[in-house]
Amino acid sequence: MAQTGTVERVVAPHGPLFHRRIERAASKVFAEGDVVVVVLEETFTPAERTLISQGQSEGIQDIRRNFQSIMADQFKSLVEQATGREVRSFTSDTDLENDIAVEVFILGDQRTDLSSFEGLENPAEQ
Image (cartoon, rainbow, N blue to C red; front, side, top):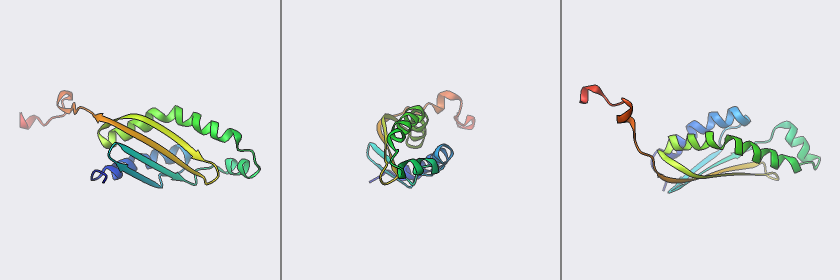
């Protein structure tokens, strides 16, 4: 079972980022153990839909993979912030036939809480 609040914390940051980048919000987010999966549906732009309907989809997959490569650090950072764990691996793919994109994050170790070293602790507690 997903940790309490993990899915909600992942959805909250992903929605706006995905929406700004591809004008779509996450449809579903699943978090279980060391795996977080973000599913996006209806992600194609009108231009992409036109190309696909005309049998010209060859370049779309390449463009999407290039985009995900460019955005990987931002996506991983959001999941790390939401889960408090480092992202060991990130992969993404798009099903052109069904207009579904899937982002898969494999989590690593817990990140160290450095808030006390950054002057964020409450001075009244000292």
